[in-house]
Amino acid sequence: MSDQDDDNWVAGWILVAVLAVTLGLVLTASVCSGKLAHGDVTRNGIETTLATGFAYPGDKWAGDQFFCLRKKIDATTPGVAHRWRKCGSRVTITNRRNGRKVTARIIDRGPYWLVPASCARDAVDKGGFRYASHKCWKRGRPATRRETIDALFRRPLPKGMVYANGLDMTPLIRRALMHNGKEPVDLVWR
Image 1 (cartoon, rainbow, N blue to C red):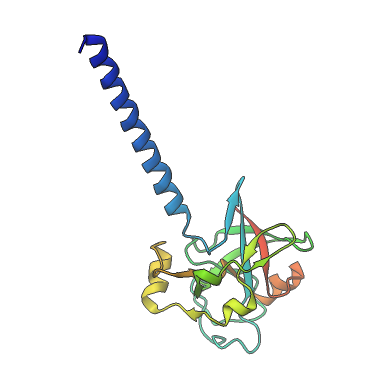
Image 2: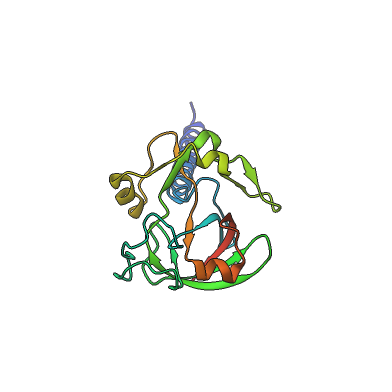
């Protein structure tokens, strides 16, 4: 082998190493960013997720305390719940169905409803966003205490399970958006 062949061989291996490191970084970034609810999409700073309601009259957790506010749940308090965003963070929420917008603060932790990954993308909104339908929710379960702690630190879920939704809203926020209680929304974090 000549010196030029040795140089080409070394350059080829360096290129392979650089590509492997780059691929590893891309895969790591996608795994870390994949800790949203199943089917959530982030593009151009806009996160699309399925939103639901909480703190409504008859909610089985009514009477508990808001995690961030440290006071009892009240249906007249405006705000949203998110699993890991900082308490007090502001988010602009857009209802994908009707285009209505509202800005709210994080006042609680949640939602923690898990569904089987196999059925989590069985409904599609008019913009093509795939999410868990009511039928899929019936096959789900609440997260265990350990899983709710893991959610705060964005650790992976048990194999085969995904979050059904990414945001919970109080009745005031739902009414302002004319939200039906279980449909996709677009989020812009501030």
